[in-house]
Length: 320
Image (tube, rainbow, N blue to C red; front, side, top):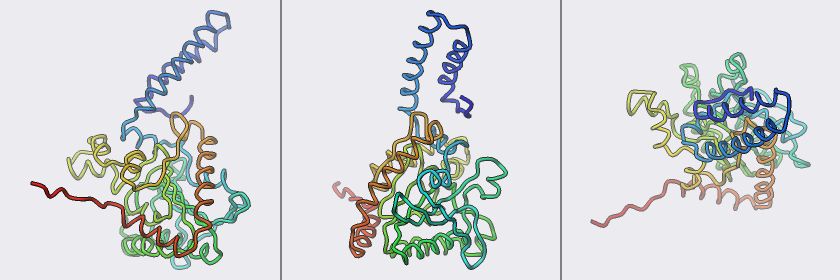
C-alpha cells in the first residue's frame, strides 16, 4: 500500500483495502477467518494479474516512479562505490553515473543511466537521457576499467538519448556510434543489465556486452510505444497496440536471442520488493562474472562479436 497503482492493479487495491478495513477492527474469530480468506484471494489475484501482463502493462511497470534506479542497485550490490565525473572534454553528464566499486572482494567498473525519483531530481538527471558527453564519459570509464583489468557492469534505464539541438551540435550520433564500435574492442568482460527502459540508441550507446540481462518487467526496443504509435497511426493513444507489435518485452527478446537471460522480479514488480530484486541481480552478476572472467581475451572478443553478428539473422522461404 502507498505505492502508485495502474488501472490494471485496481482489483488488487480493492482487496487490499478490504483487508486493511478488517484489520483495523476489533479482532474476533469471524474477522480473522475473513482476513485469511481475503489474503488467499489477494495472492491468487496477484498471480492471475501479474502472470498475464500485456507488453504495455510491463512498460508501465518499467516506468513506475518507485522502481529502483541505477544508483539504488549500485549502492545495494557493490561496496566502496567511488564515482568518477566528467568526460574530460565538455562537462559531467548527470544522466549517467560512472565509477568503481567492489563486488564481493572483486574490484569492478560500474556505469548506470540514472533517472530521478521526483520532478526536481529528474530535471537534474535529464530524465535519464544522456548527452554526447555522457557517452564519452562512459567510454572513459570503460577504458580505465580495461587498463586495470576490471570487469565492467552496466545498468541501462533510459527513455532515449537526449534529442536537443545542443546534443546534436556536440555529436550525439557520433558519440553513440563510436561507443558501439569501441565496446567490441574492450578487453575485459562486460555485463549489461536492462533494469527499466531501454530505448533506441540511448540504450545501445552503452549496451554492447558479453552478456545482456533484462529484468522481467523491463523493456528494450528501437523506439518507445508512444513514438511508434505517433509515426504509424498519428495517435499516441495507440501505444498499447504498438507495444504488442514491437516485441519489446524480456520474454520476446529472449526468444529472438537479443538478450541472454531474464532476471525475475518479485510479484508486482521490482518496486514492490527492491531488496529481493537486488539479490536476484546480484546472483546473476556473480554467475556471469564466474563464467566470463577466466576467458582469454581473444575468445572473449570473438564471442562478443559473434553474439551480435548472429542477431537478426533470418532465412527467407524461396519456395513458390
